[in-house]
Length: 158
Image 1 (cartoon, rainbow, N blue to C red):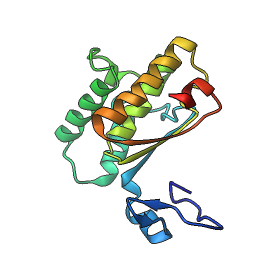
Image 2: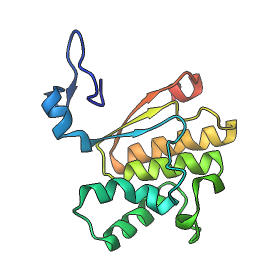
Image 3: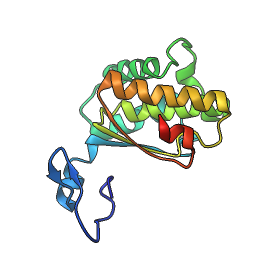
C-alpha cells in the first residue's frame, strides 16, 4: 500500500500530509524506493549498470551525471573504495555487498521514503548488524524515512 501498488480497503495512508491515492501514487512514485529481501539486482548487469538502470529511465541525466551519482551512492553505503566494483557482476559479490549495492541503487533515485523488505535476511549476524547501522546512517545523514518489514527482533528494535 505504501508503494501505491494497491489501495487500502479501509482507512487511508498519508504521505507528507497527502492521501495516497492511485494518481498521487503514480505521480510521486519516484519519492519512494524499495530494497528487496534478495536485493533484486539484475544478474546480467554490472554494479554500475544496476545503479544506472533507474536513472536512465528518468532520461534527464547525462552519462557523466549517472556515473557521478553511482560513485556517490556507493560511497554512502561504504563501497566507494574499490575502483573495480562498478564493473563487477552480482555473482561476484557477497550477500552484504549485494545488499549495499541494492541500497545504493535505491538512494540514487533520491527517494524520500525507503521501504526495506527483510533487510537482514540471509546475512550473518555481523553483516546484519552492519546493514542495520547503514539503514540508520542513511536515515540520519540523508534525511530519508525508513520503513522496515522484518521478523528480526533486533532489527525492529533499532
